[in-house]
Image 1: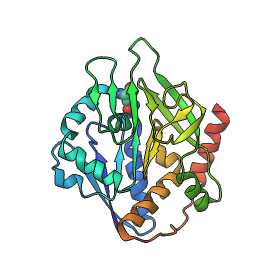
Image 2: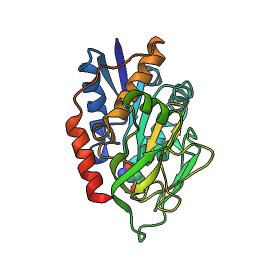
Image 3: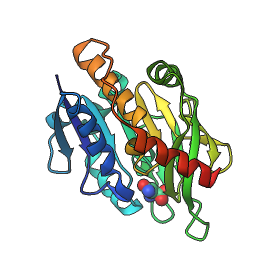
Image 4: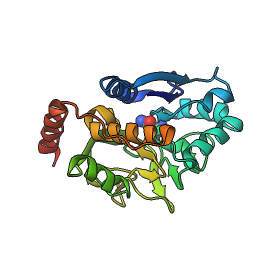
Length: 256
Ligand code: GLN
């Protein structure tokens, strides 16, 4: 078995260690004998390249980089990405990435950036004199069938931990939230929701990076990618995640 992991604009969108999500997926596949190709999707890549991935990762970025990315991503590349997510190809998008996959992002300075409208959400930056949402975050997963499928894999559904740093405040339309905030700000610091979940795509404000801190989410993405590509449901060989587990417990003790 072999999976191609598409990586959206690594040169422009890799803040706060989000590349760790790609490394985590790669290693967890390789430790189970699953081959991995990493496909960086930078500006020099063509539309055809955007059609080649089995799993997609998008990291955070600052407003300036988001604007550059959106100039490149519009049109055919956007259409291909949308088609793949609509078809259920799994993905994880952090912070700046979901802002671009939503309907629009209003930055602190400059014009509104039109998004791809894949997630039914909008993001508004309240201005440079309003404090950013910064700190450790913990949230309970609420999105279905994600919760049920994680429960099936692990026997329970652990609290997710991460680190957030965003000025933009995200408001959900009809899309399901990914989680409910236990500690931290989440989407906007007001309504208690964190992230979004659509088809098999996870949108979150949690850097950390997310997947090494919460490896069960990485395994869920791998299982989904294999299911989509090969049409079979696999039980992944369990790995020793005791250190990640202890780290999650330690951070939960510290912040909750
Ligand atoms: N530019 C966005 C914001 O400040 C995203 C930041 C990020 O990706 N960490 O809201």
